[in-house]
Length: 191
Image (cartoon, rainbow, N blue to C red; front, side, top):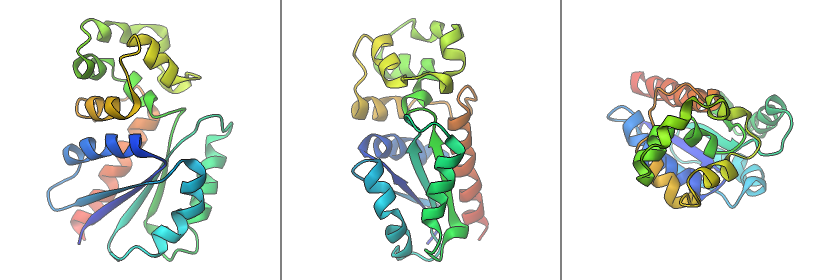
């Protein structure tokens, strides 16, 4: 069975992917999102979950927030090291949301406007702050302020995820996630 499996740190990431993936994956490639109870739980259990996964044709993407971790590359290398020894390391990719999941949303304020029914919000995309959202220190706080506290993590992830432009390039970390999804699903589709 052609399957793309995501290991994510929590429910908000699962909520986002559950509505985003049906639009991103070709017919015939299934997806499964496995949420953990935070970063430590993800890091502690991911190797065991990958190793024990029953579908031998599955491909894996680990998605984690950068948060306050200073070095994105070191964080990614550490997560890849946890994939070593699973027997599936060749079928694992790691993607980091710089700095938080909300960066993806701030990169597409038109999607936030439509999802939260806040006319005029997309006009702020041109402001200096939202042109490079991966550089923001606290995207979740920025999003709450921008939406006048209407954004809530899980519900917002579901609503905004339905509207996100898959070809949006304002957030390099979102662009890399979508590219990984497309690359692995094409690999599965051609297998």
